Length: 621
Ligand code: TTP
Ligand code: CA
Ligand code: CA
Image (cartoon, rainbow, N blue to C red; front, side):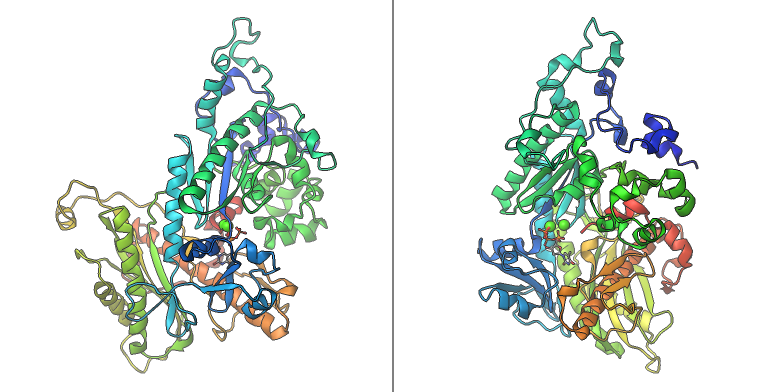
């Protein structure tokens, strides 16, 4: 398939000229035809997307739970700081720091360890010093708050806004449709082509009114060398008017979230997802940043491209080496042909992104997670079959609680399958999973889930005591969760009646389900010679630890190992969800109920995984 049609340059003008002016679509002519068109999709010149992210999210959840609105607070997961609120950041505390060092910087720091489960707990508990050998972390509180927040966006934003949950604390909004409506209501003269319009529907719209930006957020400057007050006088475009309408709506929605839930958020508003996400952190916390099209070039050009998240991995490195460049501006001199010659046809997405072009759609997903995964890393290892049972109970308790809680919001939710995954470093392959259809029991209790888990565990590990084992991680998941249609008397009747359930769509693992990091000694994997960098052999992502984060070589290695393990578990979670959804769709019927390793032809997998910006958006956290 030719990639040329995807290039904005080739749509708006000849491809040959593309390199002469890199940002040539910042002020496209908008005609009556464009304005009155219904479905221009990602090519709509009046497209407006917002990304809203919660400030210091887990820390904020804990501040509200504990009712301590202003104190410096950090959230711990074992030894790692996973969230630092803004009052604590004022003391210089960062996420990469050790808790002891953070306490030195701020002795009155409130330290909350995330809630944990231990065997026998029906609900997670807050404990001061939980032990990773006997406890498992619970992120339930944050998930619950996340659901509430998403609901408020839905209630608070104009009808017709598409909302996509991007991670536990952020969402994309496509406001293009409602904005059009509002534009036509506010400026009714736009809905009729004037009689004297020289080109009928293709006549450009009259000049827009000036936009009053005050109270709508922070404008990313068009020319950072000039006094910001001058910016306000720059003539506006109809796209600016659209941005300002979005900013009003977002301001209202964010205030609603703050008033009803107490969370503060930051938003980015721009013409596409990439730019909205990028500028959401322009002013944080409690900021709303607006990136007008005219401001795109000076915003992007000085940026170090390897700092742009999805250009940071292998690709970014190759680009830097190949062309000896470091900023977005530097890369603009590389022609599309050159880039495609060296990096393949697909690299058009890089070419586009560097020019602030991204046609990725905001995709409203189902409110219900289609899978729920509870996992536990076991740094000390489980060496006997029986040693696994208490952990299965802990995992089962979490799954049972989560499913029952989700049913309070959406009654009749039902999983199709239960899946167990184990990492046994003494076995080949080390990573294995097994699934079984979820039995049609009325009540999902810890006992029922644990019984199903125990069965899978026995099948995976084998009951032969001679088989060598050292299991360093296990997870239990419900997948294919769906709401059964209402109107049926009970779930049992539904299944007995043999009504066909709709097909599942393939989904990615929910990134918030990424298991907690392993402790030290969790097996040797490819830590690079540089103890502050790890390049994932599966996806090429580069994970770097700032030099300042830890003091000694040993500390750095331990920290790096943690980051690496966490990243690997992310792949495992992703794989489980992929394997299962393929199986559910009947693509791999042979895999149902069979023990399977995760060995797959690596090349092929890489090709199948989402590329470029799609990958980036799947990984937002
Ligand atoms: P982020 O949105 O990345 O960060 P944040 O909300 O804490 O702070 P900011 O104001 O800068 O947005 O992550 C959201 C939550 O996800 C965070 O509060 C804790 C959790 N998290 C982890 O558990 N581990 C991680 O490595 C990261 C980055 C986040
Ligand atoms: Ca956040
Ligand atoms: Ca976030």
